[in-house]
Image 1 (spheres, rainbow, N blue to C red):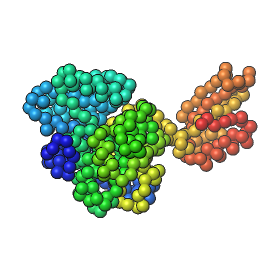
Image 2: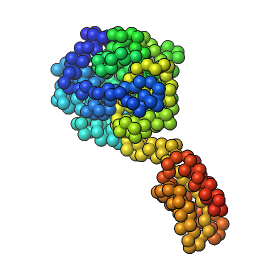
Image 3: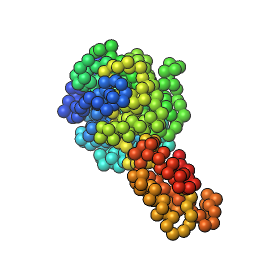
Image 4: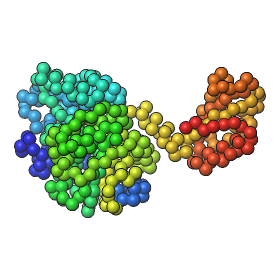
Length: 406
């Protein structure tokens, strides 16, 4: 194949090349997401890959096409985590040394996993772009082969093998929702699908805080955007790829964006309702469906759950905020008389309304509390808005001054 082109033929060759080395991930129907979204939805579970994301497809395809001389010298990559793990794992599996440059603030779970797969990790820069520049410098100075995370036709062809699988797994498929960072994943899938069945609708999704592909599409040229923090760190890319922009313009029907809260709800819905762990980027496509951000009109749709490597601290925060948003967790500030029995009287009211106290905190010195009084922060597990309202009414009826902490 031509090393400068992505074609249906190159994607088919990649599939043959990867056969047996990459997990043929399942694509089950999701009654839950279908019911919420109003579309018949299937989930392509690339979070179940050995390294937790689709990235190893493109990484391995690149590694398997290296010359003997290139393999001997070793490879280098820049990545916020998933591409790093894919390169590290498959380089080691093929007896090739790998060096990975990662941003300084990369989640520890991804750094540790990359090192665990045998790569030498270099932490450099505040974001992907700085890590990329350092990786390019090291590639030249140390004569290493650079494995680009998205703007390489061989890598794109590897990611495109997902498209071929989807055509087999979902009969009468009508639409696919795919997360976009630099654009390698959607470029490969869209090429494979559109060159086979042009009627299938391809929809891309970006984090609203990092919409580099959306901005490039507006002006039909590459644009570098400002870096902003997002829980979808796997698709937080300031500048789309030159090849990927052309492929997206050619094959992709629509690109939309999702907000942080929408991504978080996608993560929580997958975790609670589907018993499935997804990172921010991995839940972005599901977020589009949950919040009805795309023009689908009841089409049989696949949402790509493209990765599951999420930092447990971030996951904990997402769960907590999700519980608050769903009125299953509430915090109240309540004024009490500072005398024996006051707390007991308060907890009797809470218990009578079947709420569970999970945290208590007293304060006598701050918040302008009068002498002889105390202020208590109480966090409750609740069953919804109606129960919370009944508790608030009971507190008011008993004469307690209180307010809800939002």
